[in-house]
Image (cartoon, rainbow, N blue to C red; front, top):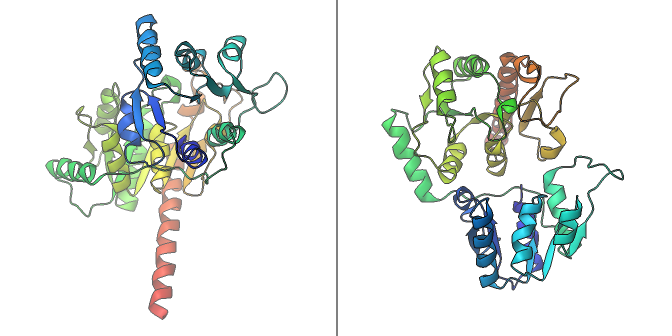
Length: 339
């Protein structure tokens, strides 16, 4: 969701060398984009990592740091590195001291009213004098990633022409975002039977047991890619190859949007406005309970926002999305034939 912001920065600072800093896994995710020149790895948390980060930033002699996260930690490294201009949102006294170009959160005084993250990030670049260059999410899939995926699927006996339902059943945010495994299993079985898609389970680190439970609870064939091989760069290729993504409200959702793939999203504790962009090919399913959105990582009660969200709704959403795509293809084919 930061890619529109990166495009705006690239156009607004055409002669600048732009470095993106982030966790190591994100380097492969963003690889191939023309909106930045280099990727710098954030060494993580702790005093030693903070000093290492500040030293690395100081050596590169940056003129401007743009902080997209709101945490004091994200701004502390650039502050200690002596980067002269430091732009971002100020939400507490510490952030206020660490920034030189401060933006106030949109909304009522004293409140942090939710707005889409894409819009929040673009507001920073606007304040820096950069014009928008569209709100489309953008990612690039390399030929090498496609080749690795083809070999991997072939090892599992997947026909190259087989339509895939990619399933990402985990959530780094916390357990509150997790749809029950039995719901995933029922939805996958139904979508496979009705729409002819082969479910491919693609868990992230720490999610392998979740994927295995789903596969065990299913009655139809599925492929479990929880072997620890895949990176986010490989996940891009898998989602690009898919006909549909079924996911909790997590990062793979935004990969699908960036690559133009339809997705069905089950959402519980988080506020839908944060990610309400490019919803044309998405179906965001929520259970309207009074305690949602709570933004809690772990549910303190009965997790009704997810447990009561029935698998049938995901099946209906998948049918609707793929039916709409088939209808568009049919209309285009008919128009070309009539000519």
